Image 1 (cartoon, rainbow, N blue to C red):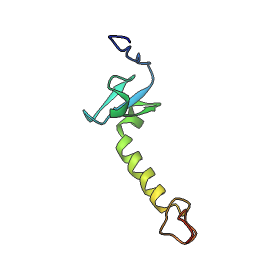
Image 2: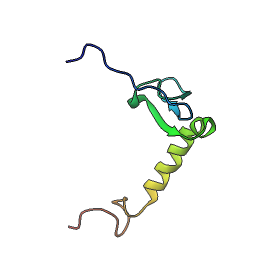
Image 3: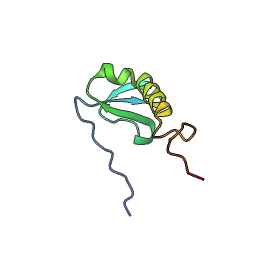
Length: 77
């Protein structure tokens, strides 16, 4: 068992949004559980929370994943 974990090296040009610090970082600096990305640009990463909200809303409205919608992915009973 290793005493020290090898940190993933950051890659120039990959941008992440850190949920813990609320900041944009180039290359992964914070742990994976605390970040969104990678994004292609700093600007895309800075809008990560907005993008996540939009995607969540699309998912909620998608009848394939909405158990409450007629014909949605719920169990037939």
